[in-house]
Length: 224
Ligand SMILES: [Zn+2]
Image (cartoon, rainbow, N blue to C red):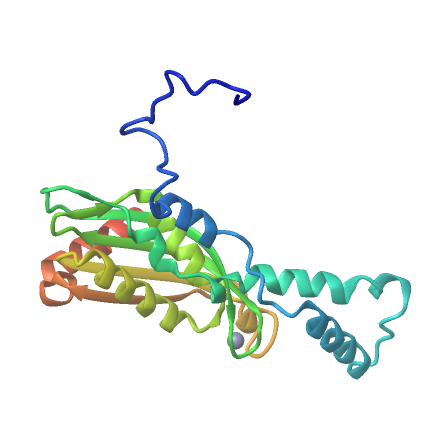
């Protein structure tokens, strides 16, 4: 005899995850959001010790002993996007027949400039005009986060976000505006603290229709 009776047990018909079928989109998204594994921590630790030697430091002095390990964990975190597919966040869509602009403003992000490996941080504004297909608003923030976490330049990040949303949601138009402060401009080189770099990428309606583009820009920059 079994230890527990299955008498009267029935499968839930609609609600709840379906454990017999393929993984749900939520499961896939959760898996994709897990910390990336393929980072070679040992290699980073060795490299950081080398850099410390090279600049004239002693990596074995007390304050620096844990530094190579901390830096390895930090790189795994800030470059986690290299091992994620940001498109997973745009797979669960809803049908909506309104064709008004959806804009999520002030999505904070941290990325890393590929020329100096220094952070650039700021805000992304993502607007689109759906063509029947919309996503949850928080998904746009997740996409920005996944795309941000890699070495890159701001221009490519902006274009990549616009192209990804265009491909996945097939909206009537997409506009992405990114404003960021680059450490490589504030703490070194020209040393201009407070300077902001603004990039934009527009697709579809926002490219072809000046009134739509103007509406997007005024919603993003109007109230300052
Ligand atoms: Zn740079």
